[in-house]
Amino acid sequence: DTEVTQTPKHLVMGMTNKKSLKCEQHMGHRAMYWYKQKAKKPPELMFVYSYEKLSINESVPSRFSPECPNSSLLNLHLHALQPEDSALYLCASSQPPWGTKTNYGYTFGSGTRLTVV
Amino acid sequence: DQQVKQNSPSLSVQEGRISILNCDYTNSMFDYFLWYKKYPAEGPTFLISISSIKDKNEDGRFTVFLNKSAKHLSLHIVPSQPGDSAVYFCAASGGDAGNMLTFGGGTRLMVKP
Image (cartoon, rainbow over all chains, first blue to last red; front, side, top):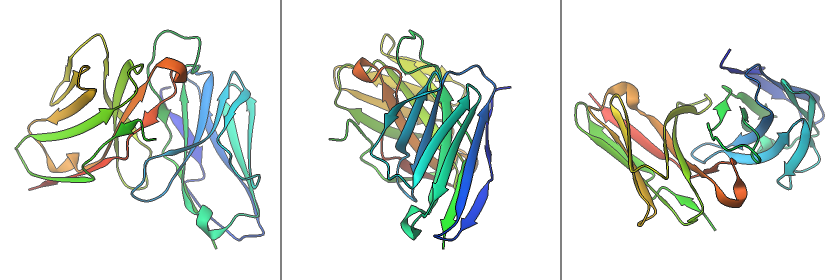
């Protein structure tokens, strides 16, 4: 299995809703990432988990709450989002950012297209 | 400070001709470079990579060239096909960032039939 699977593919939510995005990989990668991408912009890093521990939080608002239940799963819990949070949310996995010599880059999921109304 | 830059936001090429996408970086500690291809509403997919110990890596129609002294890399696609139309992101890793990727802003390639 060489894929990162993200669900759902599309999500429309109101500003008072609570929803979760899910990401799963079975490549044995011990680092997982959440990125946010707006149209015509590069992916913007949100969170990095290394060995199931949060290692980087790029000053993301608390209405985004990541969770890594185990080495294969990564969730992003959403609450009280704003319309400007509408974007493509990408999950990626890789070998750990530090302590490994070989770099194979990231494997990205297909993303969740989130629309906040 | 943008450490990886793709100065051309878009590029239009005729089918069958060569596409050349450029990328510049400022961090001399970067030692691994990748190109990703992205279609709308999909995640980026890995295309080709190069280590700093090499100056060229080829995979089918795709070749990446690295000029370390100029801190410049380029992706050549030949011959270009309409299905190559996508956004191409250059990424780099190494140094303090370890294997974390730093992305360029992307170049939209349009291959016209």
